[in-house]
Image 1 (cartoon, helix red, strand yellow):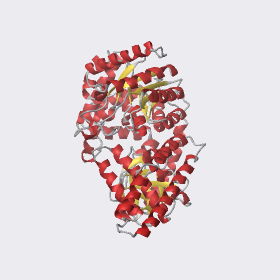
Image 2 (cartoon, helix red, strand yellow):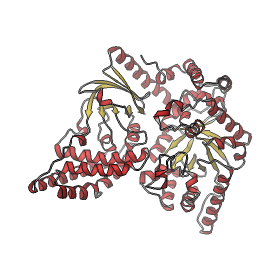
Image 3 (tube, rainbow, N blue to C red):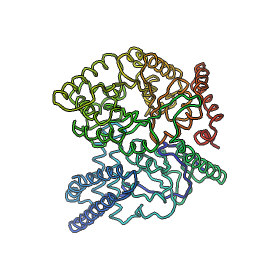
Image 4 (cartoon, helix red, strand yellow):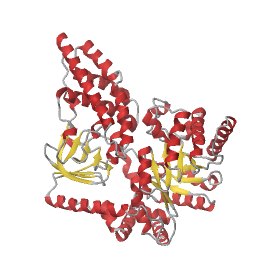
Length: 587
């Protein structure tokens, strides 16, 4: 029995035999063919291309009555564009002609060339986009050789793969694929987004996974903790079967809270908003009873389209989203580019310290015209929702927010002169995610209409730890007393200046932190929409006065691990079922 660790992608537990999906591109041999064979190779290759195109066309009509179909359609459209690129036809055919390689080898050769180009573009997003090219190459080669079609799986299995693509996931029969485990992959990949939306338990990024598995092995995929257990013993299978049953029962019970008023036991209102990136998540947010949208990540709309959207393109998207949530608050965050999120090969891509350098509002205040296009699009779309707000990320000084407000006023004047309708007084807020903003929160609260605590970045900037670097993962501590002190100081100053403050980082959805955040004075949470029922279930059974005492005790502790153990004990005492699902002990 082996216990392996990776990145938890999609919650849930799966127990079954495996189907190993090897990387077929690594099995291709290079050799030269004669002139007659060249023609046969090209013919076979082009036939495979046409077969894959037909497959993509069929996928467009799949799940028409499913709420996820719109998201699927966008990704399928992306693949349809990709397979028609010169790379897959012109480049490969030219390689067969020039080097006399068989078609599969010519495709893999071209794939290696494009991989080198993608490798120059640092960032998780670009590595994920290379996987899209590779996925189509994989599918074409498998078509050439009549390999197993994942759509034909008709028995319960867990897919074990070196890496996974949306093209493959979209072919999975959901009733047969119980879980997924991969050696590579990231939380930002298209595959991860679809897997989570399909609620298939999944763990990606398991180092040396293929050294531990063989054909027909049985595995357990634990999507909560990012664990895969190979060939578990009967005792472990029994334990996980029980956990799986408890999880499914608890999920049903938690979902029952969706229609209830979101208040603590002592009648304090707590608003739970959703963080979203696309229309699919907007629909999930509405279904799960979100009070509104606490964070619309606009940069992911740009990334998905792989270009900077102009004003009218943005206007149409914001209009659609504002109408979907017409009766509720929706906060649109301006572009948060940089770090590991880019649109094309810009200066940011070669920044030696992208998280500390040229990113977010710093870029927008230099690219004024692009910034104005986004602000104008939001201002114009504001007529479709009276509750729209604008949020500026990565503010670090008073000067920055004052300059933002000047540009915003310029945009309003331009639109007014053009005679276009808009909402005149759109609240403008900021994300507090840099320590300087937290320290200046009393002054900043006099300049803006609301705060949103971006705790993911606040933790990494306060503790000088890149949250994407596994080598320093142990230093990424949301419960570090310094981080908690900055959160408390920000909340205190927001309340003192009578402006709303919310928390929208990952800690807002973690059951371990929710009662502590309530104790810190937070009454607005913004989380992944699938987590809204979980957060609400804890709020409904918490006493605000009691959580304040929880904070008073925790603030006396000097070490993050001590605070964590204290919060675990509190969760175990008050929410045993949730504790058992999220923090069960490993044998």
